[in-house]
Length: 187
Image 1: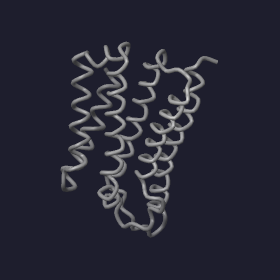
Image 2: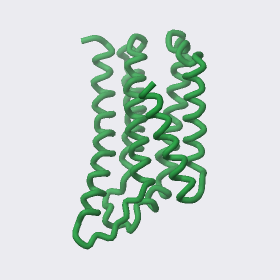
Image 3: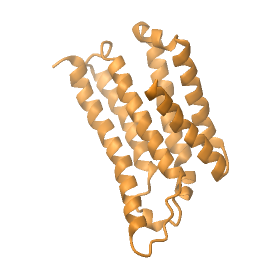
């Protein structure tokens, strides 16, 4: 087992649990909505936030692969992986409410948690960029114009999603965040 495989086992476990949190939350919301006489509206915002979190998790999972040759086993790296992936878990856990049936509209839940979820993810993105910048082998990735441009777009859209008011504007920003990842994955 390589050092990367050892660290990645911990990282993969925590990120996998984060993915399960988002998918489980969506499943609970759909289940509540399908009950006879259900009045819960799922809306667009909370599912879009969930999709964005899933896409961001996949992106970071891929970023871990890029950094595989520079991550060694140490107390520092294990703590960093735990804090980083644990923060993703926190964000993923908050995307959907525990009891969706207690809310009339999940869009209201989105407006209650969006700044926390997106703020955590924004902080993680900044940490990832700082880590890449601090390692010469990885800093090369930040110097590519396309990569830098996509990072700036992601930062701007995440901040916009945290501050924009109104349902329609929020949907537009969340769709743009999801679309940005879909374009990246299809390039």
